[in-house]
Image (tube, rainbow, N blue to C red; front, top):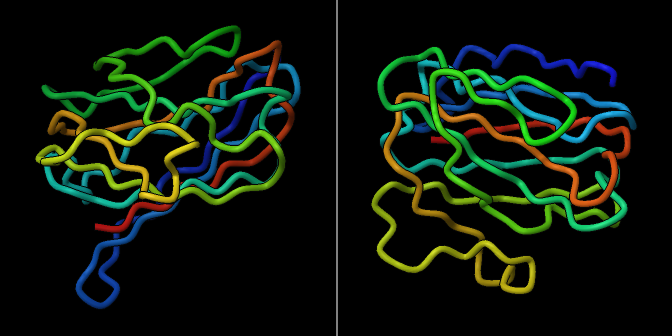
Length: 164
C-alpha cells in the first residue's frame, strides 16, 4: 500500500473574532484511509468548533464514513497506517461523525463539534439537512479520518478547515 501525505495545519490565526486553521491530506487509490494530522495547539478542542471537510473527488465506491479521534492527556495524538482504519497513538477513536462523507463526487461537509452538545448527535447523511453535529469528548487534540467502506479509497485530497 502506498503512503498518504498531509500538510501541517496552518498556524491558527484570528479572522474577525474567530480562530481559523487549515490542513490537507492526500491519498491514492491504494489506501483504506485518508487521515489528518492532529489539530494544532491554537485550537481548543474542549470547546465548540466547526469542522469543514472538503473532498476534491469521490472518496469510495460506497459509503465513506468520517471518524474522529481524540487525546485527553497530551498533544502526541497521531494516526498511522493505510491498510485499514488508522492505528492511534496517544489517543482514542471516538467513532464516526458521519456515516457517509459523500462518495458520489467532490463534496463539502460542515460539522459542529461540541463537547457540550445538548441534543442528540446527527451523524447520518439522510439527516444532513438538520445540520451534522456531534458531542465529542473535550480533548487536547482531535484528528479525522475518511475510511473505506468497500475495498480501497479512490484517490482524492481532503481539505480540513477548523473555525472556532
